[in-house]
Image 1: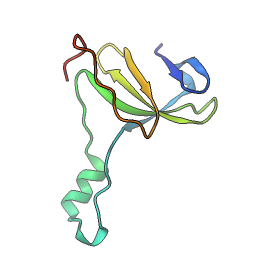
Image 2: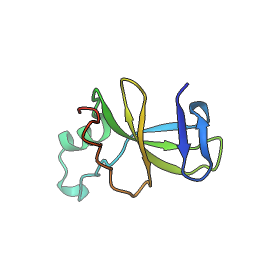
Image 3: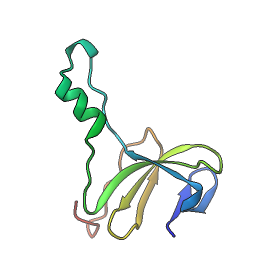
Image 4: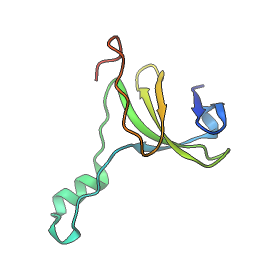
Length: 98
């Protein structure tokens, strides 16, 4: 089982959390200028990389806080946990390829 570190509660098992999907997705706008194609891409298309991926997680069965996780989709290794409004950290030079 994957372990995540909640910024408020510390290390906990994965089953206490809920994944909210890819982070840092910008909503297109203004609404009157957005095409159906652009709106469809915003709603339905997400990155599915092999390697490092930035995701939103919520400590559902704990403090309820949302935070971001930089996780390897192959090994499930967590490279970083950072604030929901924070900038995605860079991986070390020997980190995973994206």
